Length: 105
Image 1 (cartoon, one colour):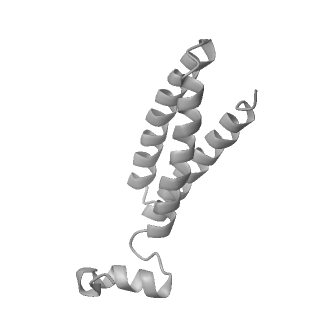
Image 2 (cartoon, one colour):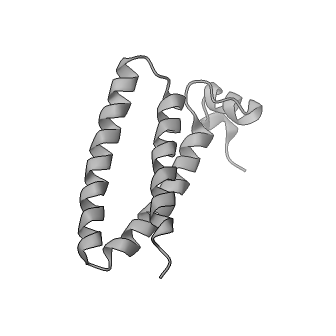
């Protein structure tokens, strides 16, 4: 059993009450899990080495730059960390749908 005293009061509150006050821990964890599936799908697509793989590589980089600028602008406009994580999850879900649609041989 982990030492509960090593967690901050905010962490204990979030874990015990299900609250994401301060930082969306659960949503961030889900983002990491969902993003790992997109990484797998992209690696599979890139492994083909064809023209579609090159287009995917360029799209991947441009999407990451656009998402980073969007997140920065939203933060400057006063968005919460939960809103930023949710928006990233929307981007990841869209990529998963797009990549899954072209995955089947």
